[in-house]
Image (tube, rainbow, N blue to C red; front, top):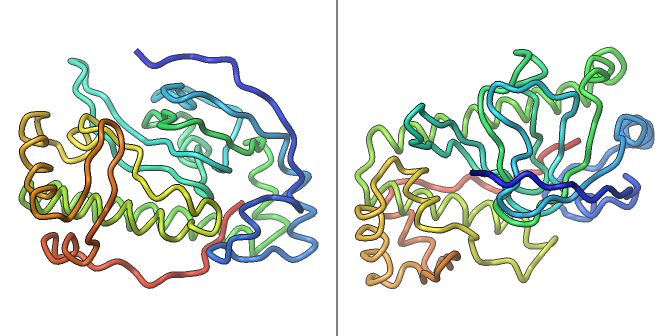
Length: 251
C-alpha cells in the first residue's frame, strides 16, 4: 500500500528557482515570472512511496517537480500495475485532472520529491493573460503524448530485451538533460519491480532480461539503482535514437 505522509511545506522564490539555472529550460521574461510567482502557492516535499495524486480523485492543485523522481501508473482490480511514465524535474503533474475533472492515473514519489504547488482554479488565467505560457502548457501536454506513443510502441512491438534497452536509454537521456542541476545523480533510481511494471513483463522475465544487459556490459545493476555504461549499445539494441537536446518550457 502506498504511504500517506504529511508534506513539509516551504517557499522558494520563482526568481531563485534552481530549474532556471539549467540551460535545458527556457527563460521567463519579467512579466511571465511575476505571473508564475503569483500563481504558485508554495512547495512541499514528500518521502519515497508517498502518493501525490490518486487515480479517480479530484485535486485542487497542479504541481511542477522541483527535484526528485515520481512515476505515473494505473492499477487493475486484481492489483496488477502498469507504470505509464516517469516524472522528473520540470515536469507538470495534474493537468489531466484540470481538463477531465478527475485523475485517470496515480502519481507516486519514487525518491524524495519536492514539487511547486499551483491552484488549479487559476489555470484559465494562463490562457486569458499569457499566450506564451499557454503555448508552454500545450507543448508540455503534447510532449507527454509523444512519450506515451513511444512507450506504447515499445510495450506492443519490441522484444523484452529491446524494451528494457529502450527504457534504460530513455531514462538515461532524461537524466543527462538535467546534469547541470544534479551532476552527481547519474544513477537511475528504479528497482526491477519498477522495470517489470513499466515493460509489462513478469519479475522473473525482467530479471533474466536485465542480466543479459549486465553481461553485455551495457548497464551496471544494483539493488534499487541502475547505471548506464553504454548508451549507444542500448540504442542499437532497442532501435531507438534519443532526441537532440531541446530548450523546453516549464511552469
